[in-house]
Image: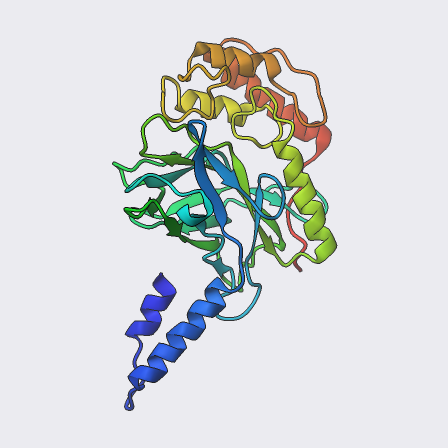
Length: 320
């Protein structure tokens, strides 16, 4: 973790801190960063990764501090699987995650758009950091490419890993808005014949009071249940972004967010499912006719422009 590395490297001048004082400082910081928290549980069951969340079914809550040394930073939640409680993984199994769609934002009263500069940066356990913005799409995990790595199970099958999450930018001159920030993830494994988990949300509270946070949890829960055919990024509406997920993963047999008919490959049939459900949302809006893939983009752009003119555009931010 970069914050701990910076503190370890720091030395006052001209005096030096005693080893015991340094150790005490590091332990205090570790407690402050990890704090009291509940990790996301995972295990294998009937050929699939199963995920158990704490805040609500399919939602794991977390907190970004709004002030202090750790403002807009957390290493929670972690991911855990323990054999002594009847769970655990295979010896040496490597766990990765997919980010299934863009960063979602609830501003205290409804879902809202994010500025292009706002992101959650995930510092992984190996490989490059993962940047999730309001405009990013599917970002699949890959052990061979060292992408979106969580870690490796012990020889006995136990697993406990944390990654670091940063809400950015962290700059007083351009503060991010208070609200709930949601990452939609799905876990994968190097174990053979084990399917990826169902999508779930890690939902970060940044400055919301108890009632607004409760409303945010309810709103994100509605995005998970019931699911909508063709909603390949699980944001509660079948729209142009889902076409992008399908297009970017066409032909894939591992990144199956857009495998609408669950036949193990993203193919033309999954496009048809998206097309037939285009325009549907949790509110039950009827689908809109969509042409073949070669002509889809112009029609989608026209649809989005028309929707903005009629419905207006909500901009995020409760923070003054």
